[in-house]
Image (cartoon, rainbow, N blue to C red; front, side):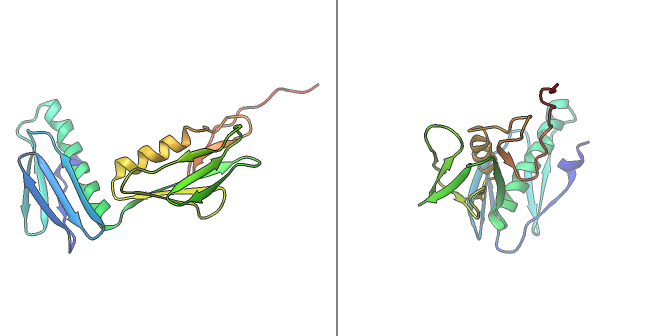
Length: 178
């Protein structure tokens, strides 16, 4: 059995969950999220505890069981605490500046790159070499952070580029001199 799928989700104070057909709506202090879960999974709420159950023990149902529970748990966590990812710009002259809601990144190209966040996401620049992506939807936060990282991925020789704060870059040895 799926160990993750069997774990119950505790619903914190101030969070409201509605389930109609396959649409799960989670409303909390930071906002509201909706997600369609697979039609075979059933969601039950009893006394501030949510459980996800599956109809059979087939491999597809086992896979969807843990996935459905994780998606709902991420929605509950998102509307209570929110999610954030921090990116770091490594390189001489690499910097980011905030312009309204957008971020302007000078990353070694002939032109600055302007990043516009989608609705519900927020970009913050605490220092010129750090960008923080914040939001309540874990998937959207991760996607925007990955798109920003793709502007200039870190290269393995000097480590220059945009990397996640906790990312370790595998370094290669350069040319050997005489």
